[in-house]
Amino acid sequence: MNCPNVNECVCPKHTCPNHGKCCACVIKHRETDSLPFCLFPDNGGDKSNENFYRFLKKRYELEVIK
Image (cartoon, rainbow, N blue to C red; front, side, top):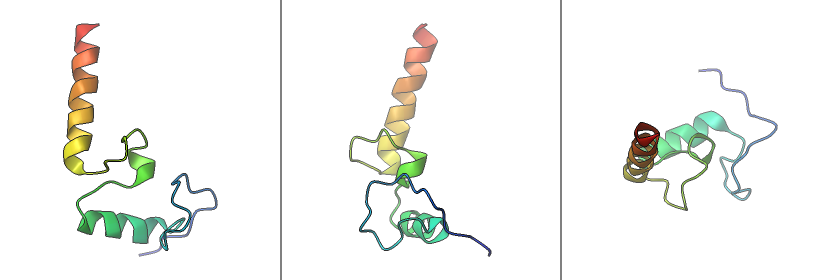
């Protein structure tokens, strides 16, 4: 797999060994059942898939109300 590093990683964890290394970051998060910051920046500190689904559900319910 060819996965170049990124120059501008949006993740606030600059000390992470995977910072800017997208493929390594995605693998790490897949193994820990969580989402990388760049895919879920408004996570309130909880990057779990469960929290992501709660966030999506709440967002969807707000859109339905409109």
